[in-house]
Length: 248
Image (cartoon, rainbow, N blue to C red; front, top):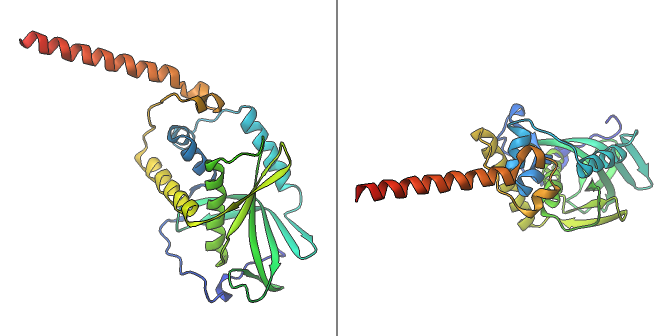
């Protein structure tokens, strides 16, 4: 990104961010959506390296490719649009790539804005995540977007109060406010993700209705795994009952 360089050191209110993770510890931001949707799915992706496409993941890939486009930087009047911006947070141990980050020229008195080398004034930072399908309130997507905001705040020494999820089906944006409730859920999701990977254990399957839309359904086989556990539990209980009866 040769034309736009961020200058966090020039912001007096920039937070002194503690570095809790090294570069080798960083986990993909996209997996936060996984762990909010299903911890087993996150483990299958990160621990067992399992991946299968379905109509939802294929549509998402197409959307991301279109969002990134050929130009990494675009200027529209007083707005600068960055595509495929690499993100990271050494505080939360996350890394990834933003579909779109918009920089909107803001008032010089807006101390939450970021300074950019070679550009006057302050700029409000606005991340946009692209998703296929219809507009919906889905917490896993909101957590993924909020994680991008946390990375941007750490990298740029600014405040990112809001972003948006763009849905391909209606071609509409859903504005997301990064309030403390959403930020807390995002931090907790990051903590759970690192804890899961550190354990090296994939949680057992448990079938729910949402499993039908998961791309890893055939790999996970939650109905079969769940049934197997039920049979094992039944056999164990039967043996325990038989042993108790034998002692009488």
